[in-house]
Each structure stands twice: as structure tokens, then as C-alpha cells.
Length: 349
Image (cartoon, rainbow, N blue to C red; front, side, top):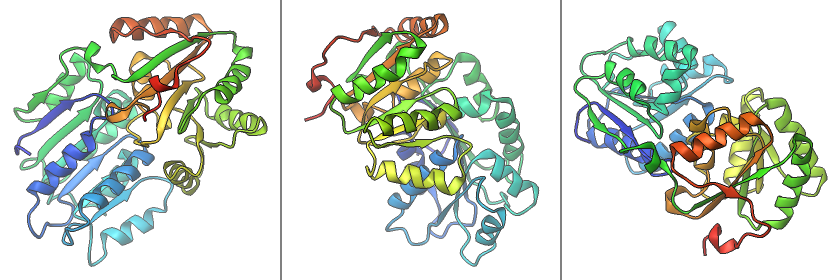
């Protein structure tokens, strides 16, 4: 909104998407040129979600058009869209597909005014994705554009990497990791053996009241297997993971967002940025491999200051180490799961 490069850190669920979309729309010309803005994010589902939010904000802005591009969809469909009589002004996508379109000279970024990285820490930490982002960054107009980077977690070293791509950026950070704690979110752990997890999960689904639940597993193959198990136990659910065909992934995302299902089993594909307002319980069936990802996962519940509940299964020394790091780094006390939980502590009125 201030017309300067921006690097911003904010608590998960506090409206980063709205900030950069409103900023772009406020500054766009009345009749914007094709490909005036490019928004990159780390997963197809997040790109799809941002496109839906952009549609909502531009409902009464007939001269502004947005499109989303990601893998799993035939690239010829993307090219047809870009070459149409009404090409997009705002391009949203994942690095792999956007790099392909730039490399093949199908996406021209000479008009680019705004370059946004959402979940920038994820994209700048992973080697392959970072290389793709850097190649895209060097395409088209590299002089007269505003660069904006957003994430909930930014280490000091990553902040410096972000600023390398910017010109005298406006910097907005949370003072310390401890302030990343999500208020209104009750967090507990359960210490148990690996072979006790399924029984405990079924017990929790039977005992807890919930609007929607998201259950995180560490491996794709186990997400589908676990969905089958809890379905057989009488809990209708769906699963989502990276190797699923793209049309099926979007179908699952839409069905869960529309509350056609109340339970989803997934990998970290849904661990960042995905905003589904009815989720009020997160279960870490498998603990994440790092404390940052714990924060992103549990942030799917208790968004925008609402109540929520996060329960983590701890079954190994590595799990214990991650949980200890979470408590130390974010200065949050994750207590052992009590025998009963007052639903008023995690269910909104």
C-alpha cells in the first residue's frame, strides 16, 4: 500500500493474503496491462485459494482479471489463456509452472509492477523451489516493480535473503518467535506407542465435538490408508496428498471447504496458508520434522483469533525433541491431554 518493497511476518491466520491483494488492487492502473502482478506460492491448493480470494475482491472491478497456473493441468490450457483477447492482469501460480511458461516465452513479464512471494520462507529454503523463484525473479521487468514477501516464520538469515531481492524494503516483523503463539488455541500432547495411535485417534474423534478436523500424517501413502481405517470406524473422511491427480486434489479441497466432509487426512500439503474457517481441531497423528511446521499446522485451527484445539501424538524421541523445541522457542506450554476437555475452551459459541 505504501508503494515500497515489503517483507512482512505475521501470525498465521491474520490476513496476509488480504494485505497483498488489497495493496496490488489499490495501486493497479484503471485499465491494467496484462501480467501486471505475479503472485507465487508453494502449493497448488494455496494458489487456487488465492485466486478465489482475488475473485472475491475484484467482483466489482470488471477491468481486473486474474488467472491461476500450476502443474497437473495441461500447459496448453495455460497458454491459451495467456494468448486470449482478455489475458490476466494478475497471475497467480506455483514456481514450477510459472517458470515453464516464462522459459517457453509464453508468459511475458515486461509489464510486471508487483512481484509477491507468499510463504516466502518455504520457497526460499527448499533448493529446487528457490532456484525456480530466482529464475522467475530475473525475468521481464526487474527495475520498476514492487516486491512483497510474506510468511509467518522468518529466521534472521532468511530475512537477509529476502532483502537481497529488494530495494530498501519496509520491514515488519514480530518481535520474537514467542509472539507467534496463537491465542485461543488449546494445545495438548499424548505420549503413546506407534501401534496405539489409530486406537487413540478413533477414541478422540468419538469423544470430541468439532466442526471440522484436519489430521496430519508424515507420509502420502499413510494418509490414504488412515482415511480408509477411520472410514471403516464410522467417520466419513477424505484424504489429500501430493501424488493425487490435480483435478482430484481440487475436488477434495472444495468438498472440505464447503463442509461436505468434516474430517480430512492429509500431509503437509495443507500445512501452510490454507484457510478453511470451520476447522477447529488439528491432530498431529505424526509429529512434523521441525518446529516451524508445527506452528503452520496447528495454525489451521484458531484462525483470526477464534478458538481451536491442537493435539499431537508423541511416540519417539524425535517427536519429544520437536515438542520440547516448540515449547521453548514459542514459549508455549503444551500440556498432556487430560481425560476430558471442556468444549467451551475450543468451540466458539
